[in-house]
Structures are given as C-alpha cells and as structure tokens.
Length: 387
Image: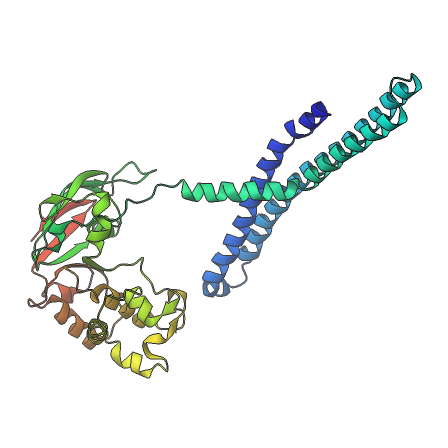
C-alpha cells in the first residue's frame, strides 16, 4: 500500500503543480489584457474597424484554456490512479485474505478487522487525491505570494539631520545611469550642483536624458555609477524616504488616484495644516474649482482623474508637490495646456526669489527662460551647456 501511494504522488504531483502555476499565469494574462482594454477604452473605440482587442483576448483565452486542459489531464490521471489503487489494494486484500482464511492461517474475525483498517486507509487516500486540486491552488497562491515578498525591499526610512538644514544643496557627481538591454547609457558622466534657491531650466531634444535627471534628483531611481550628495553627505538608499519628503515633484508619471481630493493632495498626512492645503489650492488655481464641487475637498476623484479635465488633474499634482512646502521642486511640463494668463501667474509665483525652495524644471515653454537663472542643455545624456 505504501509503495502504491508513493507511485501515485511521485510521478504526478510535481507535474500537477507545474500545470497549476502555468494555468494561473495564463489566467492573469487574460485579466491584465481586459484591464488594459478598459484603461484605454477611448483609444480602442477610436481605432475604427480593427478588432485587435478581441483578437488578443481570444489568443490569451485560448492559452488559458490549453493550460487549464493540461492541468485537468493531471487531475484525471490522478483520479485514474486512485481508482487503480483502490482496485489493487481491495483485490489484493480479498485474494491474500481469502487464501489465509482457506489455509486456516487467519480466522474470519481477523480478516474482517484487516479489511476495515485497509478500507479506512483507502478512503483517506481517496479524499487526499480528490482534494489535490485545492492543494494545488493553495501551493500556487503561496508561490505567487512568494514572488512578491521575495522581491528586494527598499530600506526603511532613516532620518538624516543634515536634510533638515535651512540650506538644501544637491550635487550630482559624475552620474551614469543605464538600463538593461541598452548598450548606450541614458546619462553619461553628469555632474551638476543645485544650490539653495536656484532656478534651473533643463532643455534638450527627446531622449537627451531630461526626465532621468529629474528622476535621479527626486530619488525615484539610483545611479548606476557616481554619487548624489545632499548638503555634502552621500545620499544612500536608507535615506531616500526622508529625502523625498523634502522634495516636491510634478512628473509625467504622476496622476490623481482613486480617493478624495484632499487625500490626493496630502496622501492623508494629518500633520499637514489646513492652512497649507488652502495655500496650495490658491497657488495652483484650484480654489474656485473646489468651491464649485458639492463635496469640496471630500469630492471623490476617479483613477487617473477620469471625470476631471487634464489641467485640473495637473493642478492637483502640482498642489501635491507644494503642500509640504518642500526645499526642492522638481517639475516636468507643470503648466502644460494651461491658459496663458494663469500659466504666467503660477510661473511668477514659483520662480519668485522670495520662495524658499530650489526649482528644477523641464519644459519647452520659452517663458521659463527669462524666469530661471540657470539654463542647462542636455544632448545624448551629457551636459553640453550650463549657463
């Protein structure tokens, strides 16, 4: 019996787990594509007569069904093995027990007792095999969780007192930044110093590395080579959270999330005074919009700000960058598509010498040129001019 149980599990349980994992991956591919279609529904509607959404969905669903069928074959095989196991054990019991009884080496009572015990074992093995599908689901779920928890975790916040000084200087020292599958680095030997209350405009062609510079200064990415210094101290991974709390960002990657307008601005940070929230709303021109909302700051915002205009979504992100009164502002096209008058007003406010922050902005708007004291030109990942 022990030998038969070993055979049943030895040659199928590993394959069953493999097919269960493959089935799960295919299932989530289908779910991800449906979510992607929902996210870009306008683009798919405007595509005209093309049926790419359905064709890819059919292709992924077919892959899922094949994976499901392969997994089901393993379950069927195990069920067949279970039936064979029951036949062999029951038949063996009857044959061996019958011979022992006929040869008077076992009485009827012993035979019945042995049969009861063996039937209980068979029943237990049957329940185990029938429940293998749930067992595979549990192991697959654990494997999925394991893939997440095994990912490298960013070190926990460690405060650095030097970041709290009045002066806030950031220095990029011979920074190189590369990404996999690309031989040429995005940034190559960049050296740049951002002094307190600097007003810096970064310009360059597409692919010059402008966004990467902002992401490095914001602490979103770490350099491949070189170091970043803050007030003369090298910025390390364990200081990144504290550093980010001193930086206000309005980048392309940022959009409103599902939550109240207040949560979108403060991230539910209860230490931010209400006066600072009202100030950020006034600076960005959101005050009159909030007054027109029935629920004011408690108005729910849909993911990516679907029910609001593009400029209002940009204002929310800009207000988010200002509300903590940062020491450094890092902006990427912050006033894109704003009315000229409003853009001038916000631009004048952000670049005024009395403002306590340093400012680094990437934009093609020529109005920033006259308002920024330094202009840095990038090309092919290098600084070609630092005026």
